[in-house]
Length: 296
Image 1 (cartoon, rainbow, N blue to C red):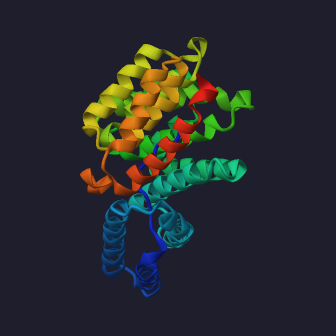
Image 2 (image 1 turned 135 degrees about the vertical axis):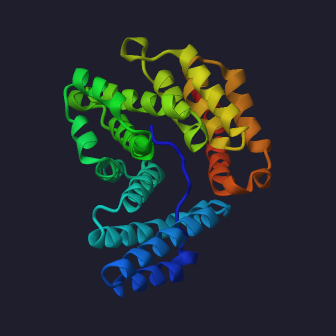
């Protein structure tokens, strides 16, 4: 249940990363340190935006570990910086999704680490609520502030992804209602957040689970369609996920093939800000189309 997000930092930007490390290493105390941290954060955002416009997922994948080490170093010096904590939660979630098929145990560890960073980005009182029994938890999250939305989203995303690859543990599965409640909280505040990603999360949830555990194909279709409307079809991965989860679950082969073919015939340069993500989506669509006869 981990969603593609803004992709991370390719090795081509390593000189910038070294510059960041040098900046942090030379930081002073007080206002100067705060200014330097602000500059670091701005540069991280700039590089992230530039990376998202690349069309080479393999190049990006080689640079992700370097970026994660950079974040760890920054957090060592600034353990309570909320922007850094959110960047770490997003980065670890994204990288774990990238390696999940090849190294499940490692992905599980990375999702858990992402969740820990997401929780640390919440105010302490809100973070404590996540440990409460469900009834108390469900009532308390309604008192969360709108400013908590990014931390809630990344906590729920990484938490849900961790659960999805830890289904052998009943104790882990028992945490799923909290994750769903958190994502519904995000949806109620801003259903367009991350271009409709909360809807994709819930679309996968309602598609992947049987009705007795909360699955509902009609709700799944609604959430996927809403996400596609919000994103204006620019994020091709949303079509891939609808095919992979909803179309398979409902045994709708024509829809499955139609969604994946739409991904393959859509020009990458039509949405430059999602070039990297859409290139990866086309790669996944080719694989899924090749598996059509295995599922229908």
